[in-house]
Every structure is written in structure tokens, then in C-alpha cells.
Length: 318
Image (cartoon, rainbow, N blue to C red; front, side, top):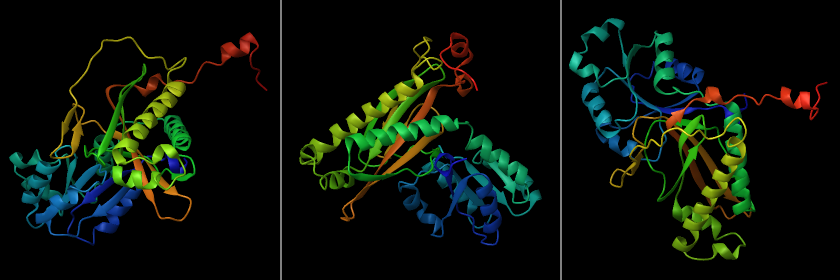
């Protein structure tokens, strides 16, 4: 599996026992997770969670004022799975029933199979076809190179995220519908950083002020990427179905800077990091998210039956 198409996720742990961290890291590595540990005061946890860090889950352990911390985490980020590590297996039974609802899983570090099942069930609950990942990266980079030539583009491994945090100040949104998936594609970016990079390029259309330049570029990039999606997936074998026109509310919370698509649906997230080629140090990133909240059935993504082409003489096998 190519590193660029290997789906990952970031998780944040507030575990206070540093002797357990190597064991946690081994489990995280085996499950394509990037582990991060908070070493700050748990009373200011909101400062960490308000940052633009795309997360898949949170971990705590049953030491200190862990119950208060867990309640605060669930209050601040209710969409993120929260897991509790206990020091002793028998400690599970000591947790009050009214407190168990806080956690999506309770485990001892020795229960590897149970931990793996939690991670699969609550983070990687969907299998994204590798061919799909590769196509998205390819047509998205093509769109960026067309709209913003003469920049270097890097695309890290895609992420599965469970948070609803909006990155930057501008978001574009467009439906993506086929017979096997239905939802939305979003593009988000920091307007100031993005405009700063565009101004370094020798392009008259990038010479206006921030409001004049950034929204049209983001809008056109959205159209181009949607065009790439249609070219790849809206063809024979991927045609959009004609089922009922079901919709759910999309809620944007400007105070919390988050957007919800009517359910705790994991999002497929790509990041495209753009850098100038002239050593001026300008860099920005565009975050691309796919939310298949209305229909998801990748089993319908089957290889085209090429046998008909063989029988018709259009291709031959050798």
C-alpha cells in the first residue's frame, strides 16, 4: 500500500502514566493512528481542543480527576469517541453505570483485541477503496496545478476524522452523488495565508485584495475538483441512482467554528500543502473533506466487466 494512500487518523491522549505510552504507541502504529499526548494542565484542555487539529478520538486514564476531565471532553467535543484506560481489569466494574455513558470503550492495556475492535468500530468504521483515494488525490492535484501553476504541491496521507472543526475562514460546499455514495465535498482554507501565496505568483487575476481574489479561486477549485469526481465516478458502473431525494439539515455553528451534517459520520480528509518555488517562504494549505452522510455502499464500486469488450473485439487478452 502506498504511503500516500494509506488512510490514517490522529488521536489525542490525556494519559498520565508515561510508562504506558510505548504500549499505546505500538497499538496506535498497528492501527494507522498518529498518537498525540497532552502534557498541559487538564483544566485548560479547551485551549488544545480549540486548535485546528483534525482528530479521530480521545483517550483518558482513570487517575487523578479523570471523571471531571472526561465530562469536560464530552462537553467540548461530543462528536469524538472517548476511550478510558483502566489500571486494573477489575477496575471496569467499579465505574458507576451513570458514568459509563461518557465512554465509547473502556479497556486495560493488555486487551489488544478489544482495543483494536474499538478503533475499527469507532474510527475506521468505513472502508474507503484505495482506487478512490488515488483518484481523488490525482484529480485534485490536477485542479490545483491548473488554477495555481508554479507552486509546489504536497499531499500527505489522507485522514479519517470525527471532529466538526472548520479550518480557516472560508468554506465551499458541493454535493457529490453517485449510486454508491451521496454526500458533500468541502474545501477550506486560511484566507490570509492563501492570499499571501497567490500574491507572489505572476498572475494578474491574483493581484486584487483578499476578498476579490480568494473566494473566486476557491469556488473555481471546487468546480474543477467536482468535475474530476464526475469524470471518474459518474460513468458506466458508477451512475447516480434515482432514489428518493432525502436531505438532512446542515448546521453551522459560528461560535464554535464547526459544521455538522446531521449525524456522527466520519469524514475523509485530504490536505494539499502549497509552497512557492521562489524561496519567499510562503506556504498555505487547502483542506478537502468528503462527508458521505446520505448513502455509502462501496460494494457497488465494481470493476467494469471488460469481457463484453473482449467479445466485441475492442480489446484482447494476451
